[in-house]
Length: 371
Image: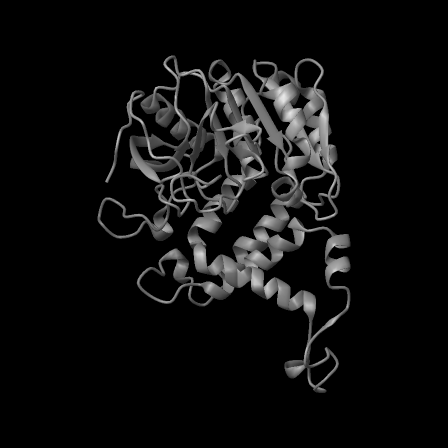
């Protein structure tokens, strides 16, 4: 089912809907016919379409940013909702599931033209490609220019790409916990995750639909990722060297049946949680998209690339982030036109602080960014 929503339509709030945006020529040379985008909206678009805000999700995020008519808790409640910094009583808020995802948009598990899942045939989709797709949805919604585009981690990379690809369509841009490009180290961590999935015996080259899914590989990928999402201090403070009862890590004598540390059980739990809600091929597709993140690709040096952006920028970082270091945010801010501060989230948790502690920046977002 696909729908095209006119500006005068009064939508349900926080309920997933679907739009067909046509065929998509991809930056890497691939092609996707008849792409569907899943999205949610909150609030009401005003008569001239000038109060729209796009919130971009991170790697395994969904469209459900905040509560709506279903009252299901969203993943960024501190940021968006009635009375929140992104006030849904004031703004028309949109969140789109990225192309390649598994929350309703066209992805590897979707049906290809022959009716079978795309699987191994799914093409490489970059963050720039996803921006082109979202621009078509904005056209359908009657949004000529976003009041603001913002996101954290991969969502922040998507927001930055919007501001550079469509400078006349972005008035404000918030880039949180991500730099101008994925570094070699970030690509290395990402490659280890995708390889964990690809080496699962059930992966079958990506064509596992209808059979056993590569759950072990996906869970291992999540373990690797989650270590980078949390700081060393966070893991030490929560778990240290504590054993997971009843057996100590030294119990049993043999390597094969020793006891476990608490931190191991914690990572197992994170892996199981993701397996229940995410598709392994989508994890690969979106990880590869994030690996491709480079706002300068084909455009020139960073300052020259960013000079074309006309948006008011808000750059933020987490002080304990060891995946996207605050220095990358500072480098981005220094290259942007004008004077751009780096707002710092103080949180021992690490990278995930952009989600859990975004409330620290509520006043700055209200007074310096969204005013």
